[in-house]
Image (cartoon, rainbow, N blue to C red; front, side, top):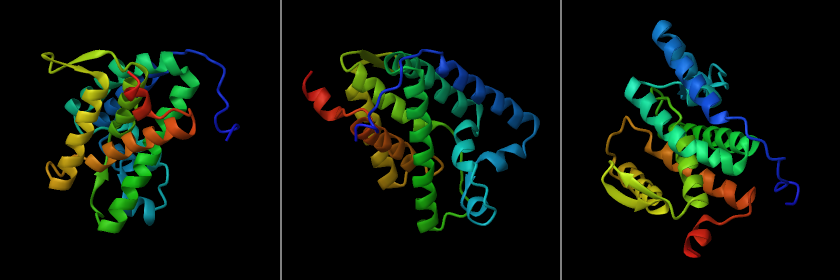
Length: 208
């Protein structure tokens, strides 16, 4: 356990802006070469029969629309910069990539069990949900304004969004949105805090 929790030497290298840049570049390439999307999006048939295992990583950097891209990048900028400064760039990058990849693996398992052969999973939302969780853990007293109007403490907003995703998943609303991937990102982020950082998000919120 001590080796798992061994911290990295703190460094800050603006990894968040690097990730934003990769997402923007990939989206531009998607517009120029539309076939790239099929190679990058996570698809059950492509992985299972084509052995395109890189899709567990590449799906995180491809997006289905400009609104999808901008929403994710705005969230990554708002939450990611502060989380990276708190964690350090190496820890943040590990956290971001691990939660995103694990969310993709979880989604792949769900698609396999449910027979969702035609689904193409795109976007950084799973990792973004994990970053939002981290923000709420590190800055629990920060007040955020939902839709620019309603003031909410960071943990309340994050848990509210998570509850909405859970309800939407159970109710089958907006089936084009990968609600389970979002929830998986949140869940794996929680596990990362427990296993790697030795922090229980719920206990840290209760102490506030």
